[in-house]
Image (tube, rainbow, N blue to C red; front, side, top):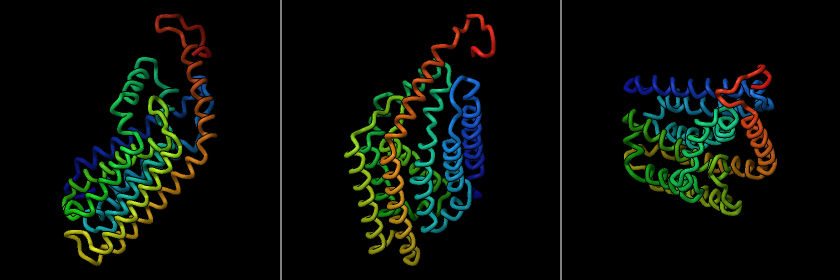
Length: 276
């Protein structure tokens, strides 16, 4: 990471490594718990998402993004659009529901199903946070400041990641309490968000970004609108195939419930390993 952010970089690497390791352990133990094997494509998607986050926060995009607007925007696209899609498609909540014991599972359900989480993951609210944050950043002086301040750059990118996760989860739909909005609303949110980002890209190409050299703006503008369009295409493809995914998720949930109900109580004798 930046030379000024060694501690933050170390913490980020540890957190991402733990997230990857815990996921892999949970995924690899599904057969032992009585479930079907966890799909390899979900594991690949999760790990790819973590690598995308690492590339921006502690990798080359993080270092160069602290000096150049184009690379800064590329980091925004990767961590705020690419990584959230990959991470959400990794279905970490579904994996947790198939892996956790009843008590931590109940805590997870309360956390993901509380009113604040539902409100933030509502597509309209999530889109305002993601798109509004981008608009404020590139039409104000914060973008220039973040290309000079490594700590601010990291905070901005983490903000893009969180907003992107909320928007992606709200549009694609996840389990454990976050109810999926009507398809027409989700499609409308994606279309309008993409349109606003494209208008933003055109605006900064026309008038520039405060505090940023003019020669950096055209390529940064192009990166923003291309990233927005590709994000919309990816989300649209996922939404188009959600019926099959819903059927698989529902089947996984039924199996998970059956396995949990078949587990013996903590103080009950366990006869064989096969019962676990």
